[in-house]
Amino acid sequence: MDRIKITGGVKLKGLIPISGSKNASLPLMAACLLTEGTLKLSNMPHLMDITTMANLLIKHGAKMELDATSGSGASSGNIISLTADNINNLEAAYEIVRKMRASVLVLGPLLARFGKARVSLPGGCAIGTRPVDLHLKALEQMGAKIILEEGYVNASVKGKLKGANIHFDKVSVGATENILMAATLAEGTTTLTNAAREPEITDLANCLVKMGAKISGIGSDKLVIEGVKQLFGTEYSVMCDRIEAGSYMVAAAITDGEIELSGVDMSVMTATANKLEEAGVEIKELENGNIRVKRKGKTIKSVDVTTQPYPGFATDMQAQLMALMCIADGTSKINETIFENRFMHVSELSRMAANISIDGHIATVKGVKKLNGAELMATDLRASISLVIAGLAAEGESIINRVYHIDRGYERLEEKLSCVGAKIERVSE
Image (cartoon, rainbow, N blue to C red; front, side, top):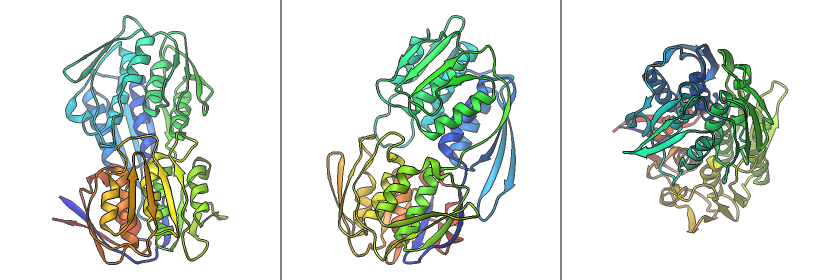
């Protein structure tokens, strides 16, 4: 099993190209099931989760063509063409779904187009319960019959799904995406209220519109979808990965470095940028369109943060910010409101001499003068990158185990960081 070895203390300097968004790519790939035409997606990242979704779609009978095109620096922008004109399998088996929660996003498209689907209950990162109840309740409101047995969701509908007025009891990105896709082929009009507003959902909605869907309210918490008889193939470029960009911003700040990021859309990163600027990080858009990130002064200031659904501070950036607060001047409080088990990185950061205490869903971080290298265990995707970030600033050597978590969401991590001076390498046990 691979490990990542980091020798900390190097100020990062140089250019990092930002990849296409993993969180946007996965529902966009699932959207291919809504049409017989070819969906051609560009700016796709090369990640383990993308491979998992591709394998799932191929098992359903979709055809895939990959065109790997070299980008700048250590990045590559892939083009994936997906054609679902001969779907011969309506089951998403446990062997694939257990690897990634986003696999459940095939449920809505399969049910909308073919009238039935059998999808395993999902797996993914162990950061707390993320039930699919909201997905299933909404599909039942649209006329679907849902039976849970032996760990599978068996869904069917007589004829077509019907438009409905659906209010989500809780803001859910996955449920919004699944039902948004299902509603595009339903009979009548579907209204989604308390819908998630994440930019990745906007990306999905814009692509669906290019495919022929009729959607209004894009970007708001109320989406209105007028069902159409069929959708068509199209070409679409995936948005930038705002979480990857935010992670590298933190890496620049924690090492007292200065980096440029290319391919970033700052309009979807307001909450992250605001919090980093409050902590004493300068984020400036340059004339060439790149984003320059560096500290304003010698030290990082402690800041308090509460994770919230978009446009609030993303839970996917919580672990990275915590790593930065470990060396900040003062005490910060981090309130995690989205997932109940997303402090698993705390014990590992503490091994590096960080001073962190937890009381329920609030972590109190007292800044220390320095972190020490240590052998660490990655527990989930975003916890993994927080350990990498901490290792970049720590004195001495850090070894991070279970790096397959990182491979799920960060494209060519070691190459990108090496290009800006980090002493980082992947080694085999």
